[in-house]
Image (cartoon, rainbow, N blue to C red; front, top):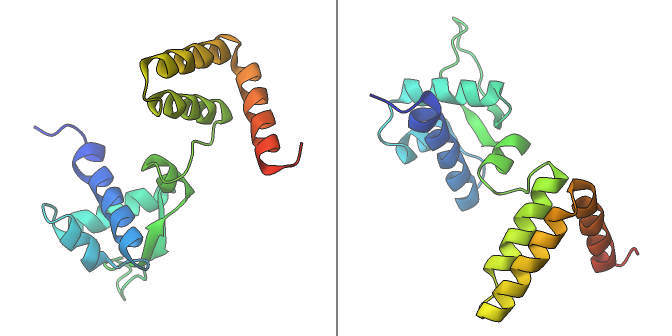
Length: 147
């Protein structure tokens, strides 16, 4: 029994596109099929169709004379795909702040530093979503020199 179409097919194909485009230029269907060896070519092509329709990938897929799309060229991750595989930050500012605070805590080595970082994270998050977003925006503006 399978977990889901996403887990068994579409997410592995999305990860293959990610891996292949990190390694080199945008890729073709045969390279994706080789990367996801457990899935047949037609299943990978159907998955690419679903991923494209859901805006996870972009690519060229010219139809044959009978209108069937059987090949893919120039396949790469779209914005939604980049976010899903962790290559881009979340589109939600609050989620990005929470993620940054979590990374900050994880980077602390000593127990005192980690405890202090956890208290900072807790204080910011307890202040609410607006406070966290405004604080993050202020810190970023100072960091890039516009404030």
